Structures are given as structure tokens and as C-alpha cells.
Image (cartoon, rainbow, N blue to C red; front, side):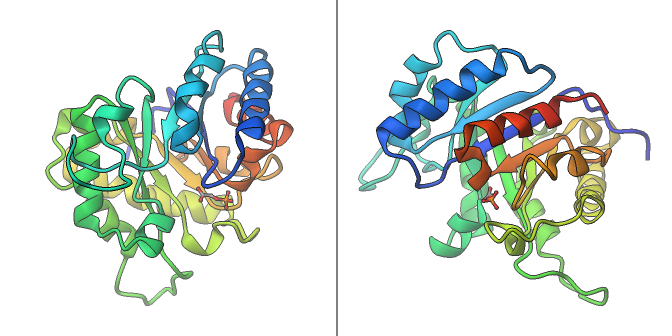
Length: 259
Ligand code: PGA
């Protein structure tokens, strides 16, 4: 297989259900100022839904490589779905939306079919889906099932070749999320290669080589470089460490450095 086109590198911060308003403002402003001297990376902040409107204002004069994302969304435009947020509400507010995060899959029973509906809805509304896939437990050599590839294929059902050019895949092993037990660069790079090979099968070499594949799970300022050294990885999806200004900026710096 030819080499991967690493035109863009990403550091996406998933704040999850964290921050009160004051914390969110301090965090966003700190990252905004810090990013002024960091190039080569697209940094994406994914705060809770309620902070998105004020964030647009706070980030008005932010560097171009600082963007907003949502952590989830419903797949329908509107209707009687108490507590849900639709693509129409997010459109114009965010450029990215995280879909199929393992916390959605396992705490809220989101199936591959439902994640696929959301992926298609995000694309239809002009947002970039960040499709998360990951196995629950470390795999053994002789394991026949491959949940990562199953989730990938399920999440991409009916996604066209053109649409595939607008998708980001995040490989997030569940055992590494919030545990401090990050995968090694080599392990994550190998899974990313498998993901890319599957995308080659489904969409052809050219499209596959341009799909950004990120790693997520206990990413820190210290280990980001290890993931970026892997030619199959185009960035990181960060949870806990994205809540600390200096740590997240260090991650952005590492992700943006030419390798
Ligand atoms: P973590 O979370 O960095 O806290 O492990 C990653 C994620 O859930 O995206």
C-alpha cells in the first residue's frame, strides 16, 4: 500500500460532561491564546451542548485552526424527542460532531445502525463526523471477532465515496479510555492500518489514504508524540487531558510538529 497523505493533523478535545460555565470560558480562552503560536494542527474543542453558543462568541477571534465540535447528536431534524439535540440545531455552530463514542455505545445502548443514522445525518447537514470505533478488551491473537472493523463497516453503511472524503475515524480502545493505560503507538498504529485497509476495500486506495485516523484513550502531552510517530495516525482524540490548558496545548504542539 502506498503512503498515507498526512495533510491534516488533529487534536480533538472531548470535554464530556465536565466544566461549569466559568471553567469552560477559562479553558477555551486559554487554549485560544496558546494556539496563536502553534501551527500544523487543527484543534477542535467539544464542550457540552449548553456551552456551544457562548463558545462561538468567545472563539470569534480565535486562530483559524481552532474549531468547535459537538459530542453527540440525534439523527432527525426535529420532533418529539425530549432532551435531544438535532443536526439543524448544531449546523452553523460546530464543524465537527463526535459519533459512536464508546460511552454512547455502552451507557446509552447506541447500536451500529443508530450510529450510522447519525453519521449520515451529520454529513447531510455539512458537519464532519468523527466516527469512534474500539474494542472493549485487549484482543488475543486467535480472536475471530473484530469489533473495530464491525463498528467501522456498520457506521459507514451507505456512506458514498464523496461523503467518505469528509469523515474522520477515531480508534479508541475502550480499555484505554480514562484508565491511564494508553495503547502503545505501535499497537494503535497497527489497528489504524487495519482500519485503513478496510477503507481501501470499501472505497479504494485514493480515498482511504486521505481519511484521517486518530487515536484516543489516555492521551497526554507525554505520549502524543508516540502516536504521531506512527504514519497511519493523523492525530488524537483527547478526554481528560483536554480539560487542562497547558496539557492540551502541549498535545496540540506535539500533534502539529512535522514528523
Ligand atoms: P481519555 O478519554 O483521554 O480521558 O482517556 C478519551 C475519550 O474518551 O475520547
